[in-house]
Length: 502
View 1 (cartoon, rainbow, N blue to C red):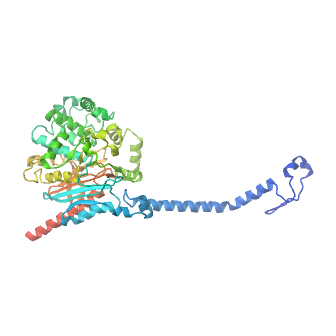
View 2 (view 1 turned 180 degrees about the horizontal axis):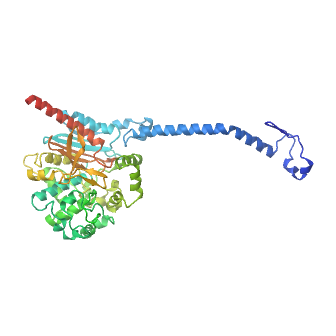
View 3 (view 1 turned 90 degrees about the vertical axis):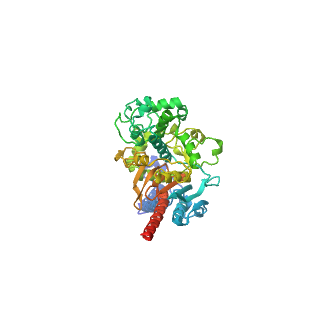
């Protein structure tokens, strides 16, 4: 018999169950298989609540630890070693950073802001340069050009600055407008008859510079082999139909803007943006190359370092229209955002754009290799209303042209950026939403954060670039920290001079 929790093994099987006696036959003093099963089952049932409670507590602990680990991880810069961000271990490498260059004593705060970007783990290698009133006050480089080979980031480093190159190309277009060779109001087909295909016959140069030409992406993409064949490439660009059936609609021309500018320049001046950049390099003592494929550049060009995927996803969600829009962009290829990305050469990731194969192909929207000082010098000339800042050097623009190209245009919603963008006629952004201490800048930036900014009132020319990419839409906190310190000092000095001479 079975009593309570104790099992009696002394009850013989009944005579009516003689056929099953073998199931219960045992040696004296040893429990049967069935009795062991009963005991084990009851013990397990008895321990069930305890095990579930323990499992719940362990799961809760793991989730809490994971939450705090992620919180610590996201509270540090994208390039902070995870051992440091999560555990506070091996953080000393953040302070073993090589720095080079020059800073005027009045702009030490900007120098500290530049260095702080490294100390908080937001940079791998970077450079910044600033002109104020035509005088170079900052020209700094820091970190690593190649972190694996331990090559420092110096004034010899050349950096791919992506869409900062658009700011350069826009200056060149403005010069041809000044000469009367081009007009913003003229139809592109006037200069390039084949362009009139696919409902593009009424598209003007102004539309192209305002990213409203309806050619923000190529329907069938483009390969590097096609881009290296001038006639084939020109035909592909001409045959691309207007995305919006000929109706003006702003949708940022990420890669295509510069390709179309080049086709126009080839027809009106027998040159490309890179040809003119070569002239700039000689005239202004700068360095800006759109096709640095020669072997001599290999040791100078910095590779690109992509931030952790989690960081990039977070930035894409917070700055790209929210989680739902992020999912749409990833999953649905008919979205404008997706198609624009697929227009990149060979549909490769931006981190691979520094390969020799792609350095052979000119892309005035994205393929500029330069340094911060070169960016800042051209920006300083624009801050000086297009006038030279060095005696004996030619001006970029005259007063009338400068007034024309910096004239604000009506606000329009941009389908790619999903917001209105304040443009000026020449093709630069008017950054009212990134005003620093109430000071507004004109210019443009490139993927990852590179920046070409100027302010005419304070005569500030600002350049910044980096090889670490986490934030896709410029400008970001890194450059703005530096620029904020510069503006504060310029305003402080301006107030001091006004009080002194008033």
